[in-house]
Amino acid sequence: MQDSPRDRHSATSSSQSLSSAWNNAAEQVVLDSALTALRTDLARLNDPYLGAVGLDFINRLSRIGCRHIPTADGSCMAAYQSFIYPADPASNGFNNRIAYGPKARDNKNLLFSAHIHEGMHALQKASAPALHASPYNPMTRIILCPRDWITAQERCEQDAYVKQAWLNSLMAVHDATLYKTSRTDPMSVSHFNSLRLTYGNLHTAMAHAAKTVLDRNFFAGPLPAGQPPTSFADHYHALSINNYAQIIASRIRNDGENIIFVRLDPDDILDIGHGFGPNPFTRPGAMKCAQDFARPSKLSFDNKASLRDLNMDLGIVDDRSLPTLREALVTIGITRAEFLARAYNGYIEPRLTPPPIIQPLTKSPAP
Ligand SMILES: [Zn+2]
Image (cartoon, rainbow, N blue to C red; front, side, top):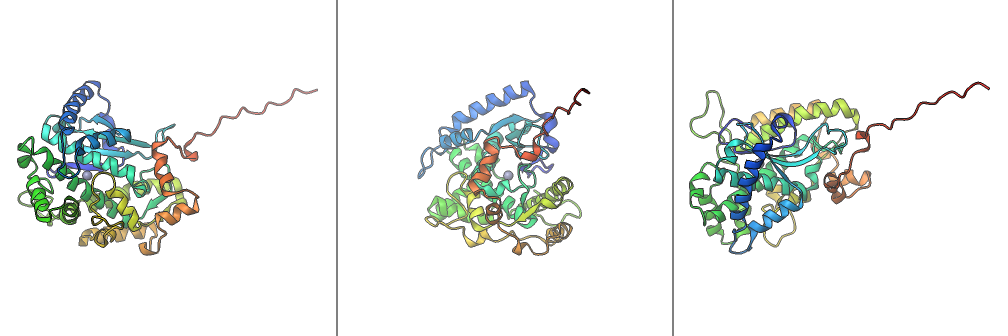
């Protein structure tokens, strides 16, 4: 939800600025019709090695119950919204919906990119338990520490932008205008095609693409006055820190000392890449997360300082000594898969259920 034209997509986990514009019935009809046409195109996509990936994408997104909703917010190209904190009464806070702004709705190519990118975020959520250890998730008090929240967000964007470029490259076979419209993306169709040609293998090309996809300058053209050079990675790091700082303040107000900060283990990272298609965080045939992706994000000087301040506010002295998500879940007796499933099966945290109304005791009549 950024102003810059370069920031086409943003994954968001809060209700914040989206809620006011949801559910306009006429807009919904227009969006639904545009998405129906888009799915017809998508269903034709064939990868030379993997076959009918377009149809597979449509089916998987439908299976996890992801909804598609218009927003009147002109600054929003598209955004995936997972959790809302605090949750509405009788809801578990999991929204699982993609909002499309007017710019995406009215342009076929932008809508395609938006649908793919945000759809990848929805599929990551369905494959990675660590993304549910979110400060926005009202169902848990087990939350990723700031350092690893930033890393998880970075991996989500790497995966989504690389797979957006991949499916755009397959769609460009039918519609060559995508070569032009993808030029300002972190990875264009031409760039992705050249990597695929160079490495000769889709999976290897994706792993290489993921390493550099967020290196591109965030600001197109001359930098605004006083603006230091900012890569897409720097931008997403700063956004993650700001969002985290904002939401954790209300979590602490409500949950006090009960928050358990955890860190990621390499399997948590690997799960993010398992959402759809080849996993860019591992080598073909390997079962483990590649070292480059298992490490925490590399931050700019300013972002490092912001993270240090945030950790200090939260009393986190050493992120490396925190329990992993897996270890923390053992202490409450649930598996990682069960932790993830809560969002989709309607689980409601007991403390969110309103207290039962108990009929007051009436005095017995005097004998
Ligand atoms: Zn994104």
